[in-house]
Image 1 (tube, rainbow, N blue to C red):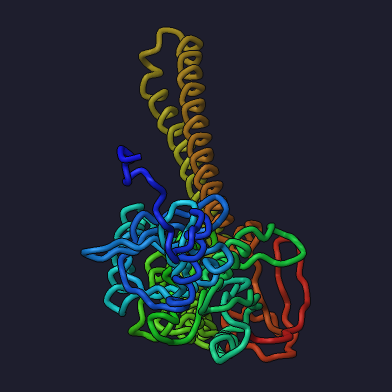
Image 2 (cartoon, rainbow, N blue to C red; image 1 turned 180 degrees about the horizontal axis):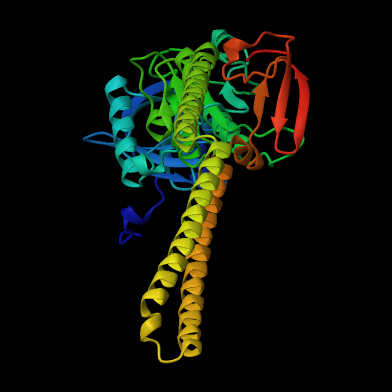
Length: 456
């Protein structure tokens, strides 16, 4: 027994209880949860991962330490911001442990950006990333229709914004308005806004619900946090991909959100968006009336100029009957000259015959020669007479054709008409007529009677 090693003998356990690993792990878990039941921790998000289950797993770190965090799916949907790598945030929740790995973690109940500076940095980084994708390119912008048939509005169904838009459109140029009600701030607002934009775009053409040809996305002013739904990527992408031209009208004139860069046109206020959406009806009517007056004046001036030219040509042409008399007189004169010429030639031939008769060898032969010469002269005279008559007929025919061409009846055959008053005098101006007056419309194939109902 003397050789017994005392170090090998059982040692007394004292008062320390013996625990299993699971008992110790869950004891520590309860201690952590009791001691740190609700804490607020600031740090930078790192290794952000959304599991297929919908739960968020990430790290919250600073310069010296790292804290594992988890956010359950139901809570993640209510956070009001999208956790992203590198965001400086303040997390509110409870500290607990994960016994299977013997580490502690924080279960997130709320998450907010750590100050406006962090929020602005996040928005600037997001803006650069989306711009690099081309979502803000001018080439993507669509023209705003001059006068939309139907205006779609994405906004809250209550409040001053929708009332201002409806009132302004009604004042300027009444158009049908379809309102897609959405929340404009808080959890789930971004998803509703994006769904509304996409929903308007998927309305079928010629369906039971008319499809707008212009969209307005609007809300009133608010803090940077209030306007955050319009900075969310899902909303920006929906606006950029809209096939319907879209006007963004978020906040006041000094407020800028990312949807403004993706929209086809930015309005400083919702009221301004309504003014950009439709023209002012009174101004449009005034412009149309002015153009109408200018057109009528131009047409009247053209008709007056053409009438004056026609009168000028008619004066130069002269009276067709007088022209025919002149040509007939000329023909008579030519005929008389031919007759006198023939008689003179016969007399000359006779004198020549008498002069040459003594020199004739045989009278019969001389007579035959003289007769032949005479016949030849007569034939020449007849040809000259015929040529002169043909030439006179041709000139007369050309004059007749020109007269018909310049006659107002040729103009009537081309589809025009002449207005005459009850005395059959031409009417060339609206000022010559009165409402209720009866006019005669002369056309190429007859005349019609009509009454003036209205001057326009």
